Each structure stands twice: as structure tokens, then as C-alpha cells.
Length: 160
Image (tube, rainbow, N blue to C red):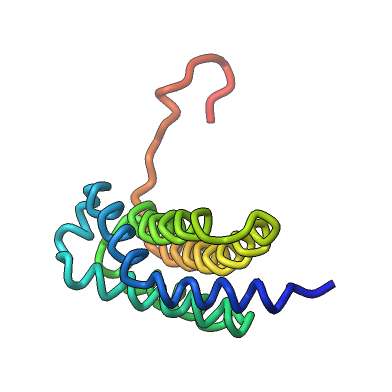
């Protein structure tokens, strides 16, 4: 059973029509999070990043293809990792956009279409967040961290 095309069209039209409001809300939510790396980047850069991700979400819902969001997540992971961003900061940016989109959908979509509408958006952003985390962990595991001897923290005959 496929997704109702009318719901997809409704979500795409709603997201397109609510673009400014969604992005403004996401920007406010991110700013209220007081994330050091995003504060250093500044509001203009942060807004541009949210706009780009938002446009990718709309395209992915419209086309029902995750390639663009996944490729973007990989690129973002590499860029933000190299710039010293914490993974939780980048995940927060995805989460505030999802929250702002959900708020608009909850206020505008008919109850019988809600599960599909929210599912479409959550699937797209979830795929992006998943790939972002995978790439981040992959990059972090390539970095040599100093080894710590934690055996002194434990007592008993079995030492590690």
C-alpha cells in the first residue's frame, strides 16, 4: 500500500507556504539552545544552513527520495567535525527544524492525514540524522585518542 499522493501534495504545499515561519521558529529554537559552535558561526550562516536543509526536506518529501538529504548529512558531518562541532550540536539543528515543521503540520493537517504527514517528515530527517551520526562516529573513530589506564578506579583481585 503506497502513500496517499494527496497527503504528499498537502505536506509539500504546506511546507512551501510556511517556509518563512518554520525557518524563523527553527532559528529561534536553535538560538535558545545556546550552542557554542552555532553562536560562533553567527545567525546568518546558521539561517542559511537551516534553509538549505529545509529545502532538501521539501524535495525529499516531494520526490520520496532520501539521496539528497543523506548526501547532505555526510557533507555536514565532515564539515562540522573538521570545524570542531559536537555531534549533539549538529543533531540539535536537525531536531529544531523537525520540531518547527511538526508544529506547523499539527496546526494545519487534518487528523486523518497526520500520521502520514508526520511520518514523511520524520523519515526524511531521521535518515539524515542517522547518516550524520554514522559519519560522525566514523570520523571520530579515526582520530587517535590517548589511552587511559582506568584500572586504579577498580578494586579487587580481577584487574583489567
